[in-house]
Image (cartoon, rainbow, N blue to C red; front, side, top):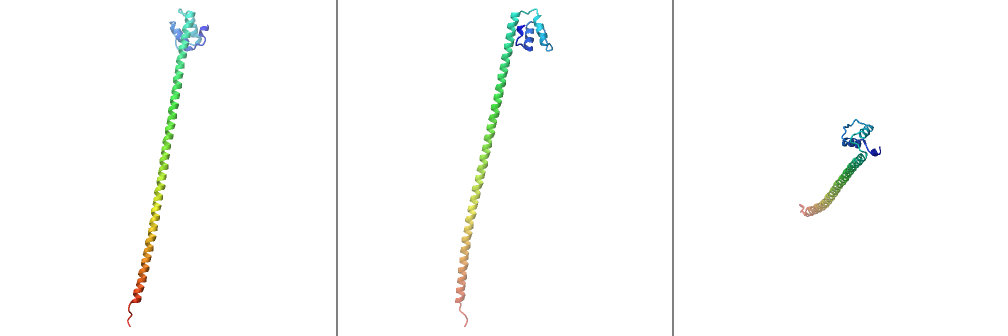
Length: 152
């Protein structure tokens, strides 16, 4: 009975089929063992070797499937990390653009402010010049008026 050590139902099913027996999924573990042991083709040594081969092949397939699954998990994780890095990069670019836009607006504001201040100073100069001109005209008018000949 030690030939069944470490064997699963799927392994016993394969061995029974290799021995030429007809089995289906409804057979239980004990039924499969009985079918194998009562098979006309059953030879303990051959069955033991076959069972070891079947178990080893199943384990290899499981290990391969597990490695593949781990690789897929690793690839998915790497892809997720790359997506996160790309998203961060895009956010950094967007933030840099926002900062550049803010800086540009500050510069435009400072330029408008400087122009407004210059315009204001220019207006003050013009008003001062007009004021002096008006004062000059007023003084000149007074002088003209005082120099006019008065009728005697």
